[in-house]
Image 1 (cartoon, protein in one colour):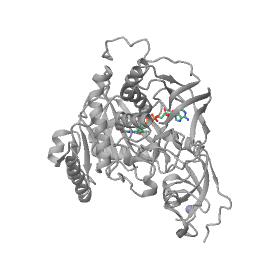
Image 2 (cartoon, helix red, strand yellow):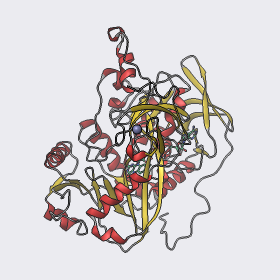
Image 3 (cartoon, helix red, strand yellow):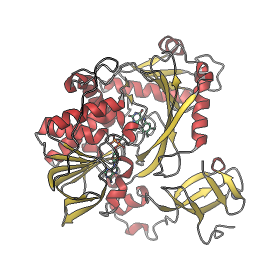
Image 4 (cartoon, helix red, strand yellow):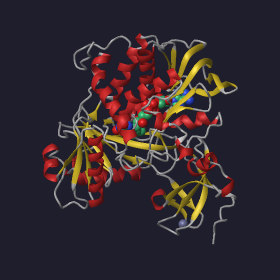
Length: 89
Length: 407
Ligand SMILES: Cc1cc2nc3c(=O)[nH]c(=O)nc-3n(C[C@H](O)[C@H](O)[C@H](O)COP(=O)(O)OP(=O)(O)OC[C@H]3O[C@@H](n4cnc5c(N)ncnc54)[C@H](O)[C@@H]3O)c2cc1C
Ligand SMILES: [Zn+2]
């Protein structure tokens, strides 16, 4: 069970959150320029490191806001992504 | 030699532990069930025996040692039905062929439906199975009660059992014994198993891989086959190959040893648990992956709580059973819940990965087609649709629903 720090609500149990996968996956700036391989990579390929992964979580059972953390996928150690409040709106 | 676990003495050793040679025709990374079966069929079907199977831990100590041993072939789509039923047919002949008892038991698998839509989808899958020559039946709650009397088929459940598909040829096998049986035969045919040998990277020359770096030195290779399950993309990342894999914890658990009460395998997608009873008597239970990526071989407790709640609801008789052990593996999941088996951009490097939560059942079939791919350099017709190019062409094999567990 992960203890996840919501930037707004503090430390909460994992069951209050949903996982959103790798962070910072930007939509292609010029989609028409992408060939099939690039589209395939954009749609289907995400980082899968053994080690630090910057990822998205949403505090579904709390403030319902999205935020990013850096988690070590081998040890589950989590640190807030910096700047952690950029999603605030 | 047929080993009777109660009376026969264990053989001295089932395989040697040789020092690695400097070079092999074929290097297979990972001595899980798939690596073992691949080596076996490379030797048996293709006469390739100069093989090293490199294993970072101990032989078959990865997901092979951690799975819930369910074997079935009732997949919806044609490509999947063909691949998994090929495997099931091999399971049916392997105990005799390997001359080693591994408690392959065709006790049957029930896949429950709890909503009207699930019932329609399940019947559609059963019809598709029949068209593909895969045995399948649709059972009503009364018929289910005859097959599995301990299951609560009354309407009082929050999610009553509306029906189930039933595959009689499906069942379970004792995973460790399968691995040992394969390893013994491979060893007899000259295959080297190198344990405690972690592959950390590759030696390349142009578009070829010429060897692998390991913690026991560099080993040259004519061809390399990856059967490293959850850690595959850690290896392919070093070559700049982008595989659409996400590695997740998947947990299972076992109860104390009980009288034989559970006659078959029961799987439920909707309340999400699957159960069987091991030969020794433990109830074996599993469910889905943890949502987040993880290599820790350790999952979250709430996942266990949910599947136990589902199990106790479906099987009131389990209410007082004690849970003895829980454990986790690291499974590699693809976006279409189907494996990737085929060539890579490196001419002599081949991958077998992405089996996610369901690759044990495929063990002999996966080994068969992967051996063919490695030996001939081209996929077998059964794994042709499973190449990594499907993520570019869009010809996905989307088995999320029919895999019968939510990946
Ligand atoms: C809890 C759980 C329940 C499951 N239940 C079922 C089920 O009921 N039915 C079913 O069909 N499937 C099930 N599965 C899935 C099944 O276990 C896997 O799909 C299957 O084992 C994968 O193939 P494999 O045997 O090659 O994997 P593994 O046994 O994991 O083999 C891969 C091997 O590669 C080794 N390795 C990894 N990286 C390296 C490296 N760099 N160098 C050297 N060696 C390396 C690992 O140590 C490991 O031994 C389950 C899995 C889990 C975790
Ligand atoms: Zn919050």
